Image (cartoon, rainbow, N blue to C red):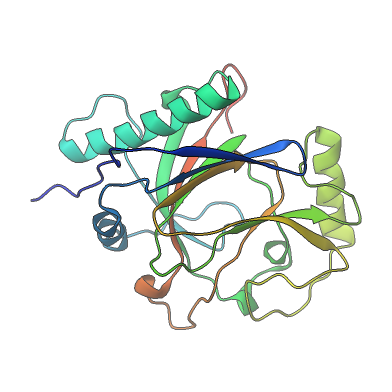
Amino acid sequence: MTSPDMRLSGSIDVKVEIVAGRFPIVLIDGFYANPDAVREFALARRYGHRQGLYPGTHEFLYEGLTPSNEHERQVLDARVLVCRVLRDLSRLPLEVADLRTDFSLVTTPARRLNKFQKHPHFDETPLLGIVYLNNPSMGGTVIYRNKPLGLVGLLTAQDRQAYERWLMESAPDRSIDSYVLDDPENWDPVYQIEGRYNRFAAYPGFILHWPQCTAVPELFDPHKARLTQRFLFRKIGGGPGA
């Protein structure tokens, strides 16, 4: 069986943009040498795993450090690159062993989202990256400020508790029919990561963000779904696992 081609691009150009004066967004365009092959491989996976409030499903990739074949080596190469770039930029004690990766498909039409999925979220992982794998793009990621609380990032336990309380007690549960967030009373967009094909983007998991998705068909077709590859750190240094 031919090994899937997940080789990295031979030339990596890293850019950093700052959101709300303090939160870094790391961008790498042209992440994979052959993104079409990566997309084809991803769409052939079985999926089935669900995590938290993510409106879709995941297929986990190699998480070890001693690959036994070329595919596992290429997945490890991607994890090593992501870890090295983010460690060099942040000076955080990031370790490849703490970084896992998966393919993810958005499968839930907007009208079927529950109340909590209708609002920007934070992730349990302290730091995450994403590679957009739709051509043409099916949407990127938007960073928002919650207007009632004045928060973009949930930097403290008190921030997180305040946001979770707002979601439970005050957040509206309107009927929606698209993944374009239209709630100016509660949400102010502060930055949009364009979901360019084969673009890698990384940001802190504690900032409030939303997957801006062009469409999710009622009759699910993976070839018409928003497809990404996620990189998620379980922990940073000696911190507790996510």
